[in-house]
Length: 289
Image 1: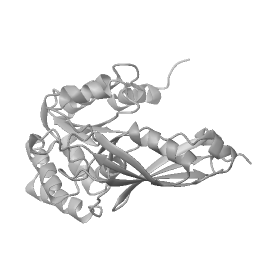
Image 2 (image 1 turned 135 degrees about the horizontal axis):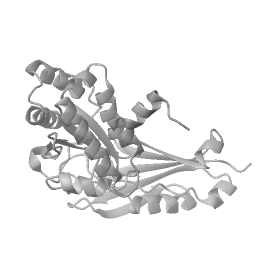
Image 3 (image 1 turned 90 degrees about the vertical axis):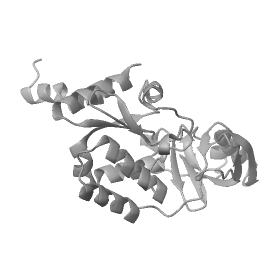
């Protein structure tokens, strides 16, 4: 069946091609299309590495989509998002583009020229252990403005000032909560579902200077749920919110039985939120009435 002209043009566009990219080279294909678009529009490329469990990634998306910030950023960059959980080849592309990368945290931003040569990334001052992620602290905002200065010289001092002010005004409250780098969702124990058991588990997690876990302790919560929370925490990767402060940090796992949307979520869903003093993971499962 012949394609309509509108559908043909949509499928032929660089954006559509990036959205349709699949397979082991998907990330490289998306990057290639972004470079082609940038070359055509005389822009640079902003690659945003993220994942679906990252609260700070959503904050950065909010920044990029803001009516005031969107035209400033898009005047200088073609923006491409690489979901590290869903895009094959994303981790390899990050290794290629990052000068050096020890934190593994997201969002991680790389700004390149139209040929794909990296200009600057979100490792503050080139420190591979300090990815600024979503710029919230004064020194993180300062580095983000420096990134724009290096990679988008066409932006005016007024636009840079407006970006700095926006980030300061919309900075979230200073959090002492762990940053989720790589997350393994907890499995709501079938025995707990069968017995209609829900509740909270409090964990204390201490990091080594390298960012690796040194100790995970369960402070309270039903034993059946504790085991699931401990398994999740031990197989996840976290980052301290500030350098040289290794904890202990509080992780709260909330196990909730909820019949809303059971037919759509295939039984379980996970949400992560960061408060001022704790990171909370909410695991919802369908009850068995």
